[in-house]
Every structure is written in structure tokens, then in C-alpha cells.
Amino acid sequence: MIESYRDRLQPLIEKAVTGDRDAFSEIVRIMMKPIVALTYRMTRNREAAYDLAQDTFLAAWQNLSGFRGEALFDSWLYRIATNKTLNYLASPKSAVVASDDYRLNDMADDNTPEKLLMQKELKGMVLDFMSTLPTRQRLVFNLRFYRNLPFTEISEITGNAEGTVKTNYREAIKKLREYMKQKGWQS
Amino acid sequence: MKCEEFHEEIMLYFGQAELPVELAGHIADCESCRAFYEEMKGMAAGLGVDDDFYPNELETERFLKRLNDEIDRTRPTVVSGISWYKLVGVAASVILVVGISLLGNFFKQNGAIPESTGTNLSVLYDDDYQIALENSDLYELSDDQFYILGIDYTSKRTYDAAGQLIEDLSEEEMKYLEENFNVGDLL
Ligand SMILES: [Zn+2]
Image (cartoon, rainbow over all chains, first blue to last red):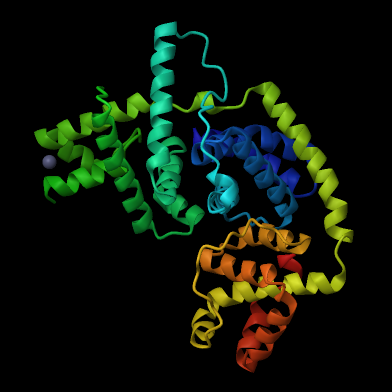
């Protein structure tokens, strides 16, 4: 999945660095989904998630000329988003009680109502679980589980050593296991 | 490796489609690890994919419009809205912050780095702090370094403090900074 959008991004990046706004818009269309998913899972606040994504792309556009080709573009974006999100989470405005608006979009149509309900409950559960994790663990869990990124890249994005990042992930999985057991979840 | 260690390793691949050969080999041979792996696999499948967090087409286009408006709005302000001496101030701070990451010990010995207390950096006191903060996202700053940037701006001592710190640098250190950082690149 990662590779597929990387291939699509490459020619667009080359155009965008020369100031091509259309190419940049196309990049936003491709990368908005994973970025919003990340900022949303981190903040659990729909409005903040969109604002942070907006700030991320704005900073990316303004600094596109400084983007060095040797870094992966999506990693670079994740790093900007990560820094913005961590700053946000450290600020008092994030202390507003997390809302429960975990339905960012309608579910796929081919699901039965029962299945939908179950999935919805599970999604809510996962988000509840994630809000119990310390920020760094939550971040690593998102980048690894949902974005399938290698630990080396997560290490670059977060600015933490690879060993630390791996420990964060393991801790999150151990807690998830406990949490799901507590909730009586069966696979 | 003991099975316990394999369990730790298995957790790192939670949610991943493929396992390293050594790990897969052991799981094939070991009942305890196989059971653990199956449990992990079931848990990961239960969490599902994250497609319901994705913004739909309408939301994406709305987002793009807002972003493009923001790009149009901020570009002229950023360039013409600050006077040259402020830019120098921002440049000096950014250089200092980047420099501090390399000359950390020097500053620590001189007691110039305050203990990080998690000051709220999102309280923006002026435009240039905002700009510096946005740019600093791209230069892998640690929390401490953000803090330094923040305290200078929030206490309104920026330019004086930056100037003082530059004066405190030895000739050798100044030369190092000059050789390794380009103000134009940073802004
Ligand atoms: Zn074993």
C-alpha cells in the first residue's frame, strides 16, 4: 500500500517543487487520508485533526523547496504532522475533553447493519484504548499498525532511537492485549 | 533464542503481513509461539483497516479549497509582513537552536539551557515566533530545543538573548556555525 502511493507521488513532487500548485493539490488528495487518519487518531478530535492536517500541508508547501530528495516525501510529511500534533497535544487547548465523533466518514455500503454495529463498537473501543496510551506509544502504534512503516522510518519521523520506538510498540501491544481481554473481546 | 524472546519479536510484527524468515521458521516448529502468533493475528484482524477514518471526496475538496485559500493568504504576509531585522532575529534563533543541537554541551556547561518544563509553545505571542516554530518543524528539533525557541519568544527576550548567546560563542564555534548553516536555507 505504501509503495503504491509512493510511485504516484514521485512525479508530482518533482512538479510541485517548481511551484506547480495543481501538482501539489494532487499530492494533498493522495496524502490527506493517511495524514488525517493519523492526526485524528492522535487527537480524537475531528476539528483538530483537520486543522493539524491543514497546518501540515501548509508548512509542506511553504518549505517544499527545502525538501531533500533523499528523505521519503511521505516520511517528511509524517514528521511535520507529528511535530504539529505533539505540540498540539502538549498545549492546553488539547485538554478539552475528547469527543466521541469517531465516525469520520460513512462505512462501506456492503456491510450488514449487524456487522456495521460491531465494527463501530470495535472502532470506538480501539479509540478508547488509544486514548489510554502515552503519546509516544500512541504515535508509534499509529505509524506502525495503520501505516505499516518500518521502524527505521518511524525512528526518523519521531526523532527517537529505533530501540525506543520498538519498545514503544511492544508496550502498546501488551496494553492492547490486556485491554481487549478486559473487554472480553474474542478473535 | 528463548520462546519469550520470540514473543517479544512477534509483537513487533503485530499487524504486518510478513514475518522475517527466522521468526516464521520458529513459529512453524513451536506450538507455544504459534499459539501466541495466532492470538496476535486475531487481535490485529479485529482492529481492522482504517478506511472509515478517511475523508470523502467532498470533504477532501473542501479541505483543498481551504488550504489553497490559506496558501494565498499567507504567502504575501509572510514575505512582506516582517521587517528585515525581525527576519534576522528569527534566523539567529533558528541558527542558534540548530547550533545548540550540535553544541549542546557547550551551552549546557554555561547554564544557558533551562530545564524543560513543558512550556506551552502554542501560545503564540507574535508572528515571527509562529514562523520560526513552523520552520523549526523541519529541522528535527527536540522538545528541549523547542522549549528554548519558545522561552526566548514568549519572554520577549529573543533578539537580545540571541545576540548575547552569539557573543558568547568562541571564534571556533562561530566559525563552525557559519560553515554549517545557511540563513537563506533556513528561511
Ligand atoms: Zn517458541
